[in-house]
Image (cartoon, rainbow, N blue to C red; front, side):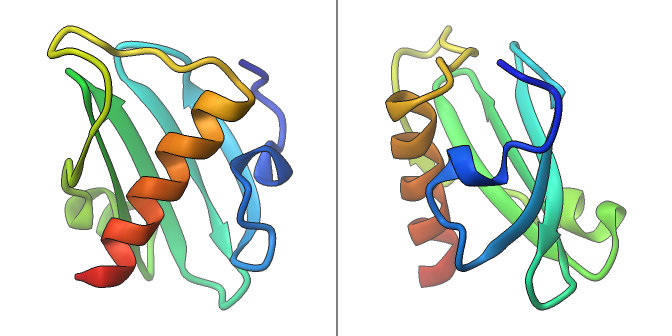
Length: 98
């Protein structure tokens, strides 16, 4: 997975302004900025994915919960492309529903 700005790869360009992979696997971690200026944190580990949102990176990390199950309990990596789009999209929808 690339480490430069992958905002377009996440599939929600109307929401995500910038996104960087900070860890590629076990866990997959992506941090970035939303168009409204808030920060977000995505994490996928042990077959669970979630997104946190906050005013700062620290707040976003604290807000994150593993809301979405994908893969098995020992899953911890995602291929860039459709798999990443699907899991990020599902996690985004779960976060929006909170």
